[in-house]
Amino acid sequence: MKSKYIAAACIAGLLSSCATKPSEIEAAYVSPTLYESLSCEQLREEATAVSSRAIAASGAQQKKADNDAVAVGVGVVIFWPALFFAKGDGATAAEVSRLKGEMKAIETASLKKNCGIRFETAAAK
Image (cartoon, rainbow, N blue to C red; front, side, top):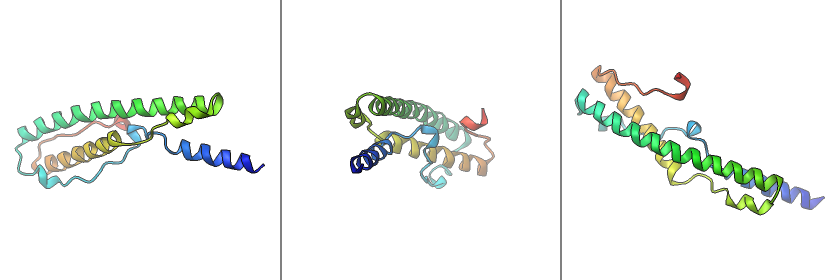
């Protein structure tokens, strides 16, 4: 009976170490003052560059989340040592968070200058 509780606690701990989906990662704070000195054209160029990097980082993070979900599924159902292959969040998640923060900062700077730059979110689709 005691071993069941220990096993359940171990599985819960490993499940919590799964990588987060990019859509669930919160934006880190990035000060809009970094972008306030840029012209609208420069803001557009920066928005394009940040958006491209965010797409790439989100894709990499989603792949990690998918791989962790498979490892946990296999581990729970078939082979428990597979649970140790769930890697969890790391540098990729931090990059997604930072880039989301940069996008918010660019939007804020754009709003102050009436540049009309807006990033589309998954919820807006």
